[in-house]
Structures are given as structure tokens and as C-alpha cells.
Length: 201
Ligand code: ATP
Image: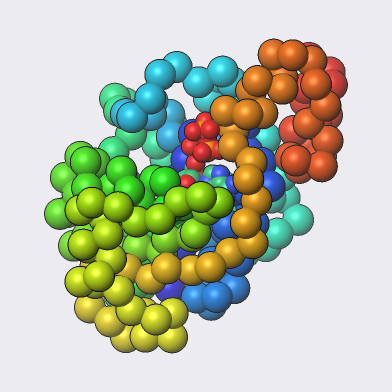
């Protein structure tokens, strides 16, 4: 099974990297593709330009062989839709189950994503628990209907949902952008390449 982990990564932080690490461990994923969004459909203009967001992810995962930086959403024109990204992965890796990884906050927004039925026809969803968040509304109903335990995922028909309890790290890129604006240290909240980038800047 292959993990696919999208996000704005504006900037990448240890909450992202622990999610990728712990979900990969729990589900025994052969690798995780980190897919920075080029033009995020759900939000405003990022602080960091696309090349910098990609470069900081690349540097931060350089010594983790299971992680792969995937720049496909930057090579594609127009908005970055997850359904299109998953369709490309499915064509490239036929027969290999795909697992879309996300935090609980993102999962709660999933019912509103572009072509969400297509997403659930292409991949499983791994939801990492995040401080203070629980499944709500339609997402909670989907979780109740489609939930499987980690060990059952590989043999399940596509579109199952597996919650994965991960170490709770209450870090968000929004908070970090506030720190950057105030000239505060990012040290120990982000990987070293991100610390160095903002020290230089
Ligand atoms: P922002 O604050 O700018 O919204 P973010 O820190 O939430 O950013 P994103 O790039 O938007 O990061 O999120 C990518 C994915 O990482 C989402 O699925 C989100 O739920 C997850 N995520 C982000 N921070 C954490 C964290 N501290 N713990 C677990 N998951 C996280």
C-alpha cells in the first residue's frame, strides 16, 4: 500500500512529518508520497512560494527513504484537485492500494471536496487524530459506515476509512507563520532545514 499525503506545507512542520511517519508505521505502507498543493483550492495565497515549499519538504525528508516528494500538483495547470492526483497515482501503480492520509480537521472538510465520491472510489482514507478534533457531521457518518481496523485495510475494498491514533502535536502552519511574522524562533517545531531557511531570510 502507498500513502499519499497532501497539504499546503506552508511551511512543513513536525506535526506533518510525525503524521506521515506514524501512519506509515501503523499501516505498514511501503512509501509515502508527500504532495504539496500548488494552488490550494480551499484557501488563500500561501506565505511561501511553491518552489520554496517544495524545496523545504525535499530537504526535510532527505534522509527518510520511505518518503518521496511528489511535485505533480505543481506541474499541472489550474487548481490542485485530490481526485485528479489520485487518478494519476492509480494509473501509475495499478493493483497497489492507495491510502490518502490526513488529519481529523481535514477529514471533517472532506465531504465538501471536489468530486469526493471519485476520491472514495480511488483510495482508502487514513485519518490521524489531532488535538481537540473529532469527526463531525457527514464525516462522522462516513467514519461509522466505512471504518476498518489497520490490519484489515490491505484486503478491504477501496473507500474504507481507518482512524490512526498518532502522537498529539498541537502545531499548525498558521501558528508558525505568526511566529515568522513576529521574528520568533521556530526551532524544535520544524525540521532543521526550515529553521535555517528562516534564519537566513
Ligand atoms: P495551516 O495552519 O496553514 O492550515 P496545517 O499546519 O494545518 O496548516 P496543512 O498543510 O494545511 O497544515 O495540512 C496538511 C495535513 O496535515 C492536513 O491533513 C492536516 O490535518 C495535517 N496536520 C497538520 N498539522 C498537524 C498536526 N499538528 N498533527 C496532525 N496532523 C496535522
